[in-house]
Length: 322
Image (cartoon, rainbow, N blue to C red; front, top):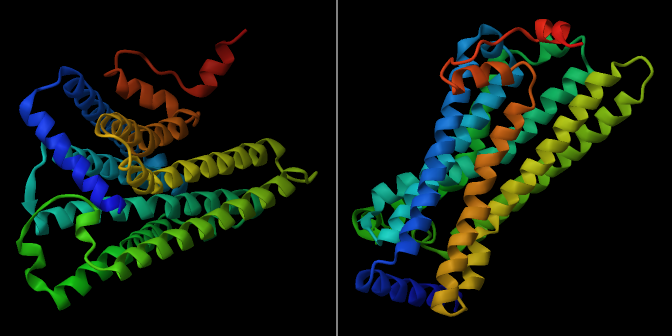
């Protein structure tokens, strides 16, 4: 029933756009799209910063951070493309739509899995400091990232293979590109819900375990309490990031509920739903994580301001303080 209401609201919304160009609507679209591309640009500067120093390139912690930046940038790009298709009511070939939806879904699933890796890396660094360099190597980290992409794409690969076997011509027709229009059968929806639930529960357990383990280690007399406390706060930040990812999962559910409202209310709340649940988490999460890093922050500011300010080493800045 909610799908029918959503379709009806979409048709009425399309007719309103064709009759009259609303400047408020255009402003909202411009703000959403420009915000996405601005933060993609910021993520690009961060990635360039991580590539500029061998210390960052050879550290597993920063490799995982770079993967988070790349993953969220792809997620932002695919989300804004789907949003543009939605507001313009473009019909494209299902094969092209499938590529965009697959990349969007894969990066969505990869986000919490990457957070689990980042938390495990901090757990090993604090609880097993003498074996950290032996266990967490750059090669193993890259291999772990590949495993994340494998598990992140399982659901989408299953959908594509199943459709190719049952109805190969499905991808040759044109369609209004949305995630829902790429789901052909009920088992695909059920599988998507099951995989999402399993991933988020598993990542939640990993974050809880690493947080408790690091907290206990921080209370140990023989441990470096400052480093342990910082690592504990990092894991806590990952838990907040996981909550932001979970908010994105609720986007489709909330939009289905909004579809039961009147058209005018639906249009405005749908925009708010898109910005708050899909765009905002992907914009803020990498920025907060990157700016709190004392080694990364000065160099990022240096490149972000187009080298307009001279960056001094952290040790020199500390010495200059009264």
